[in-house]
Image (cartoon, rainbow, N blue to C red; front, side, top):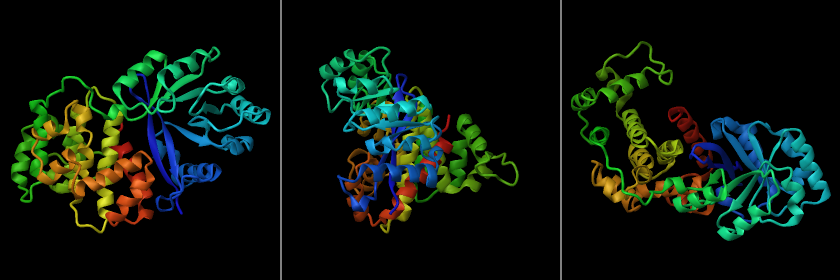
Length: 403
């Protein structure tokens, strides 16, 4: 059975992507919490490096991968590309003489090492001197415990990575403690500040989206709306003439572009345009995640035996992070933009068929495999098809959200 690999972002102090941790499971349907660590890592390596390609999962960024003590003793990490892979030493590894020597040899060969879920004890000092990163779990230890552990670290200290950061307040505390890298979904949540309003210029994107979602699409009306917005017109023509479409001849008019793309591709384009414009000043990973969610929702809809509009699924996924982008409650945002009732209900109340696909997508990206399995069954989606669809969504996001 193919392994299920999802990526979890690791951001720097400026909330830019530094790396991804690869989350693994040996098939959703065969969920086993006690899965052998060697087998898990082996499947990650086979799927991410051999079968898939690391760049397609992580878009050229570094990849953090867990390694058991047994695999470290066998020097397996030395088979990995040392420029892009960071070897995570699991918290239950015993730092005996043999293991420390193995890590020393790998470090001397340029392999990057990290201690996972770190809790300070003197026996880890030989490893601390070798590793490049130390990861502290903000759910496993209290703030005071973490502060105490950091004080006991010898200088020069490895880079500090804060795990499971879920709020802006936790991010700020981690910054004060000296952390430079952050893992968690704090950047996907609205900040408790006065929300930014949707500018008039941005409303044009949503009006076009509403026209595209209409059952009676009027291309003449759509052409007029797009033509009246210079920014949208320019980006549409640049998009249609990009190598992605490889048209036989250059397309120079809005009408030609609209006809060539068709309503489905236009919905994707306008969703991406709206998200990109609204997300200025926000972490770029928000755009990447929105793209993955949109494409993943759409692809799951195509794989499902349930009757559902895949274009609506794309929109649900793309717009699922609007509250984090605009720092407003989703209900307030949806009141201002013209979307169908189905879309509004899915985004605000998280109810209905469309919402079920979105919940599955979020569960997958966070490695909640049991939830994925249960919802996939309800949506009549063959589980074996889910991992390659996630990969396809990642590749699409890398292509359209790069920048």
